[in-house]
Length: 156
Image 1: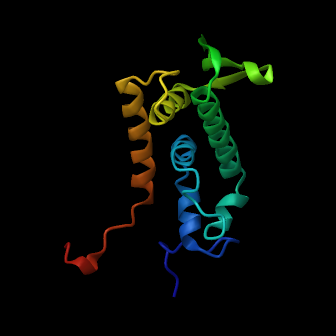
Image 2 (image 1 turned 90 degrees about the vertical axis):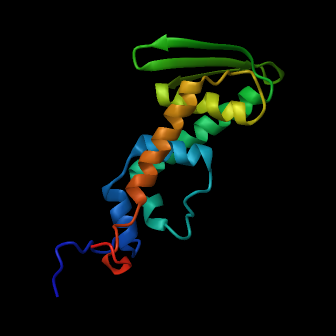
């Protein structure tokens, strides 16, 4: 009863969690968690939340959503500076006497622009290529989660 295609259950108890972790795409997961914050339920997919890569992706998505909320909510002196690894976003929240700096990849910068635009704010403009980059990244994650085609459906 050995099946080489069988993925043994992980500590979470599900083979689907093991398959997901095997095809892990951290940038795509950050995008999914930033765009749809509760896409992966902790109760249903607890094994994912035990993986350090997922915890890192989740923290990064929270940082991006926080920046979006602050940019759309009245941030001032917004600056985007190119750096060796991507961009440095700097902005000020004057009511709190708070200045925030966040180093971003090109994908993360595009995601922030995309999400700020969705709030109706124009404080951080979204270019058409930003939207395409975010959508293509999310599509990568969707392809990784697609189940294998079934022979039962008559596809032979």
